[in-house]
Amino acid sequence: MIPLLRAPCVRPRASGKHPLRADRRTGRTVPALAALPPETRRFLLFCLVGGSGVFVNLAIFYVFRHFILSPGTLGDNVAVFAGWVGSVASNFALNHWFTFRDTTRGSAVSVWHRLGRYYVSTLVAFGLQWCVFQASRACIVAIDLPPEAIFGVWALVLRWEAGLSNLAGIGVATIANYVLSKRIVFKP
Image 1 (cartoon, rainbow, N blue to C red):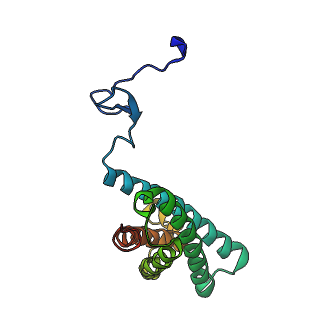
Image 2 (cartoon, rainbow, N blue to C red):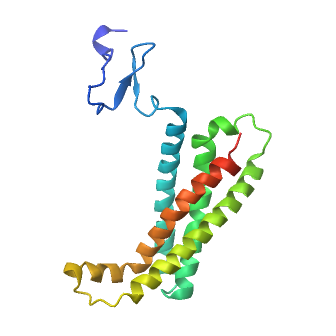
């Protein structure tokens, strides 16, 4: 290799803000994610997968609510369910092949069996999501403030109350889903 093309070994700063960290054994730099303990890395990967699932969920929710169904109680509930179904499929695939790959390789449990357990565990998480969605919508509607309140922010909350309520439900469901995935679905 030509010495000019070789990347220098970059040592991390004392503040720890550098994206690369030096491997203690070899002195080479490795990405910060690879330098983390395995469980911390797994949790961060799960959060990244969950983040992608949030976008899938909200995108499907938006498409169903605005283009397929008319807004209203039934349309909103169907849109929330459709968003959940789409995000479950994408999250299972990403979690199976990236986040929990060390527990799924060589396992006697088939992908279909794990997928079944994943749908059951996420159904529990969806139940929580739906309850939070309904409760937060009821709370927003029950608060009797004029739209100009809180410097006009309340008008935005009233306009986006279904989306904000769904986002709150997704947050609660994500935490429940991580616990169930780790302990039931992807257990070694």
